[in-house]
Length: 341
Ligand SMILES: [Zn+2]
Ligand SMILES: [Zn+2]
Image (cartoon, rainbow, N blue to C red; front, side, top):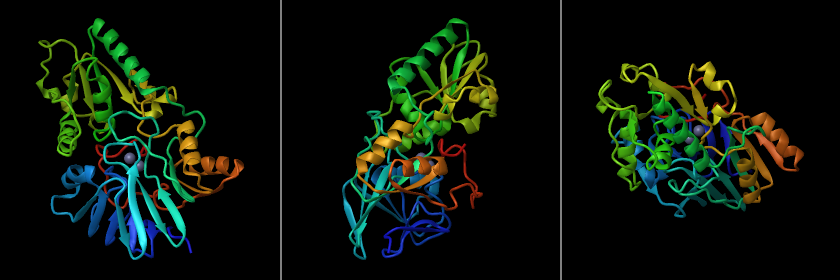
């Protein structure tokens, strides 16, 4: 019998009676990270990497029952051993390794293979069964190095300033915003949306070094020089942002690689900086696990799975509710990531 299975609650380990990033309400939820499409309300008990403590308590309530796990620490439940390993996606993100019954499984969660020198870097974990995300599982998705993209953003901002415009970047408040701050903090002054400030505080509380940045509201139109602002995409209609004009707007997302994406959103520009692996990243991660059995979830599952089968893997798509059914509870666009689009 397979150690991990999937059903209406998502990925389940029946022998241990636990679920990984489950839907609905379960007794024991093991989380890969704190994005809203993985960490949901209503479970009785949560287990997650310690870096998620402040974000999870802020989002799901101070009184949740949360067991904090460190990387490489092993927890045994009914003969099954669980451990969390860096996924390089956002602060607190982990792959969960599950070992028992002579099987080793790894659930990738969301992951990014390029080391951003901020979030602990992705580590390949040897296994026989690998459940991989494939948000960007098409060959067209191929990222430039992050430093290159950061420089392109800084150059564009400078040209905006020279023409009398400020710059407004849309970036998800958990993960993407901090990555951008990390990359841009020495290139230009930055003003941030309150929801980004909130996430910065939560990550600062668990040890991530982030500079104190002024809020967007501190910037005075007609008085202050053009500046660089950062806000989550869900805030684009807020009054707070309307007072920033004249302003050039761009989204910062892997989806920006497809030309026309930002024009459809009425933006001036787009920068393909992602916290997910690109096509070569996915393939190298899969190779690095040494796994023969690959299960594809979250993204271009059928295309990606078909490609892997052609390469000789035993590859399957996972059909669960995260393949497009409506979410059972409202999700805030402020706390999720690029896999929801
Ligand atoms: Zn995520
Ligand atoms: Zn996700």
